[in-house]
Every structure is written in structure tokens, then in C-alpha cells.
Image (tube, rainbow over all chains, first blue to last red; front, side, top):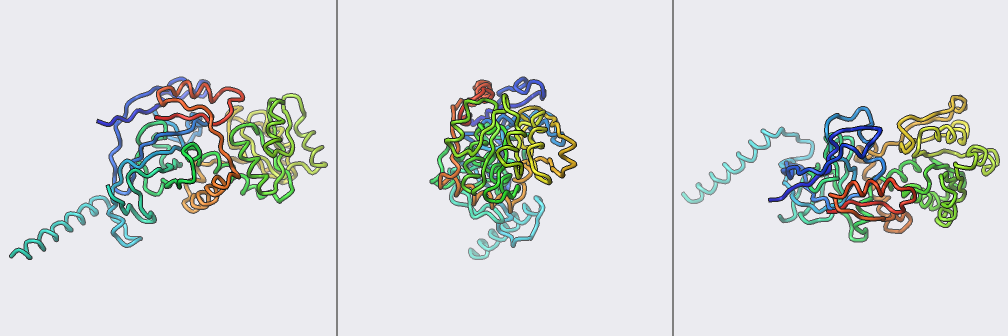
Length: 115
Length: 262
């Protein structure tokens, strides 16, 4: 099974940014519609990467730093949005309903041809 | 998986393609940055890297070159005028010198160590001031014949910002883009009275505008392909050795960009 090793800042201390960092194993994210899962292979270390938490409007809690990186596309999920005219917005459940309706139609048409 | 249409405004992303991932104010606050092996990002926040750009250049394609390009564009420095920068010996500082030279803008570069002078001049720096043993505003006045710098970018903040603001013309713009000297900046009120404007240039904010992302991608990739901007690569460490990578990053005069790989 794939694992997702990640550096996590568990405690943010402006006086000692390197403290409170740990290597943990996270879940590999699932691909959601409209998203791409990327296997990141190379990323730079900038002096400001750990400072990101110092910008006061950002959320609190543990986080994985890193503002850029190169990777390989690991998984792509075709978005239902891509089959709709642009500007047409659907909620997740409505999108799912549309997929179900599509397959029902397909099934009906197959049965119709057989009969 | 075969080539797939993945959404509005995206021409197609294929499994196995080499891509750069953008992290912006939209997704970074979720705490899912690049220092991990797998991330899920919205389809418009990746860019398929052309073969003409190496892994090392692509991995540092976003933050530094875009900050350099963005700040130098926004300062609107006329050709032949001087722009001032601090931490000029950094990877960003070097790219700033390269792009300014390409655009016909002269640079005044502030460094802490005098031994960096020759190296930066060889790279195309017009003037280099060592803040450790030189009076920065006095030297800038001398270099510019009293006009002072048209604008400035400051990676240091802290006390140095006061010297930077004092070195900029009336009504000039200073962008603070880093906090190497701390999270506070000292600004001379007299310089504010002269109309000097001090504000931040924050790449994550800029990256959040799709139209601006498009401009950056088109222009910066060409500057890298044409070797106008030459990113420098330093040592590479395994992801698990992140503490060693951080130590190396903090070293004075470490050279090229430090990487984490897996």
C-alpha cells in the first residue's frame, strides 16, 4: 500500500522555527472530482517556508510546509463539470444524480435494443 | 489512465506527466504543502512542465522567479534607473540582477559580506554595497548623483528597512518580501513624509489570480528557457533528512537552492 511521508510542523515557535517538526505518515489523498493527485518528487527549501505560519491570518494547527514542488501526475478524476456547458454549476450530489441518470438511460437503451 | 478531460479551462492532464504544483492562499492554509509525497490539488493549480525545463529548474519555478518578475514589473522602474535590493547574494537576489539587467534596469545590491561583491558584479550587478561596513543611504546617494534609487525590494526587514527607505527617492516604492531580519520592520517616518511607500509583496497572494498566473507561466518559462533567469541548484537531501536541509539552508553563503527529494 502507498504511504505518504510528510514533514509536519506540530508546534509553531517564531523564536525557533526548526523545532516542532516531525516526519509522519499521512494518508495518500483520494482524488476528488476536479482534482489531480500529484506524487511530488522534488521541492526546494526556502528560508521563508516555515514562516508561513507567522502571517497572522493563516489557520492554526499542525501543517505541512512547502509552497512549490515538481511531481508526477498520480491520479486524475474526470470532473462531471467538464461535460457540462461552462457556467453551469452543479453541487456534488446533483452531479452524482446526473451520473446515475446517465447509466440508467444507458441500461434502458440496452434493454430496449435487446427486446 | 488515458488522457482525460479534467475540467473547465484545462486542456487535459495525463497520469505520468511532469507537473509543477501551485500552492496559493487558497490551499496552503489547509496545511497541505509540498513537503510530503502526495497532494491533491485543484486541476487549475498545476502546470505541465515542457521538456525544455529541467527538474531542478521546474521544482523552483514558482516562488523565486515569480517574486522577482512580479516585484520588478510592479515597481515600474524606467530603463537606466537604479533599483535597490537587500540580501542580493541570495538565489532570489541573483535572479533579480539577471532580470533587471535584461530589462535595462541598473541594480544597487546590498550584501552583508564584502567577498560577495566580485561574484555579483560578474553576474551583472552594477553596484554592490556591503551593509556591514558601508553607510547604505550615503553610498546610494553617491552612486545615483543624489537622485536615490527609483524603488527597492527588501528581503530582510528589521533595522535594515530604515536604511532602505532612506535610500529611495521621494514617492518611491519599497516592497518587503522576506523576514530574514525578523517579523518587524523599522521605517523612518521622515521617509514616509517624503512619500516613500512601504508595503509587502506576497507571492502567495499574487498566485491566487488566475490571469496573473497565466502571465507568469508564459513569461517566466520563456525567461528560464532563454537562460535569462538561471536558477541555481545546491545540495539535495532525502525528505526524511529535512533537518539537515534546513541547517544547510540557514548557512551563510550556502550557494544554490537546497532541495528535498523522495
